Length: 118
Length: 118
DNA sequence: CCTATATATCGACGACCATCGATCCATGTG
DNA sequence: CACATGGATCGATGGTCGTCGATATATAGG
Image (tube, rainbow over all chains, first blue to last red):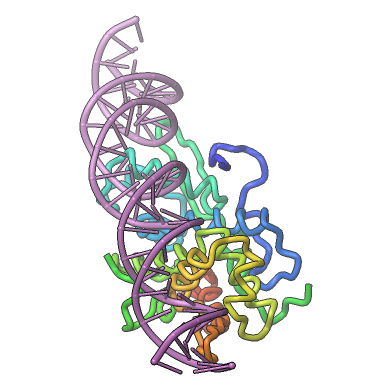
């Protein structure tokens, strides 16, 4: 349905808490999209590698660590960017990816149910 | 690979932070399993309904709100229980489901990268 | 411009997933 | 015990996903 190439509002910018009272069907769909981006071991590893790196990492450094083809790594990176978890930066011929820390914090907030009063 | 009917250690009991340094392939797989359980709009709605309910809810009350067949709801509930996010309680003929608050808190911690010093 | 290198995209394929109707298995009731 | 009802499981089906090799696109250097 929703394509990841869409340039509009990115999923991870949203994500109403799981304990929110007025959660709509659209909210649920957007939330599911973000979690879908982390529902694969390779993508979890990618995020982990980028968080621990602490700085943007080149695709050419990422690919060998993952043991996947370049095409597949590119596929996963696109999904993570589409979900708003990663950011892409072009440096000459190389593409550098890094995690969007804000997005991770927002995701943490999705699971906090104690202070939800909405 | 891993079946959700396994009774051993449940995915959501685990889940190393995304910023952990020694994340293994197995860690990534377990983490992905948990997020997979939330990678569907219906399951997000189920969790939302149970969190806002604040008390165990009967499948018979859940099914009409979701607009899905009873078989499909049962399928989703099993996945969420298997991931450790939900708990099941039998009351006579009825099955009551509730969220595992501890699991949600652990999941929130997975996204916290600031205080990670591992 | 021609070549080399880094990524992205395409097309194909096998595996997995969400969904349903039908069926099975409990548990409670007359 | 027979029957009704709630819920789990089964089998089938259409759709999506992860993967790769091949190809396209872009940048840089001679």
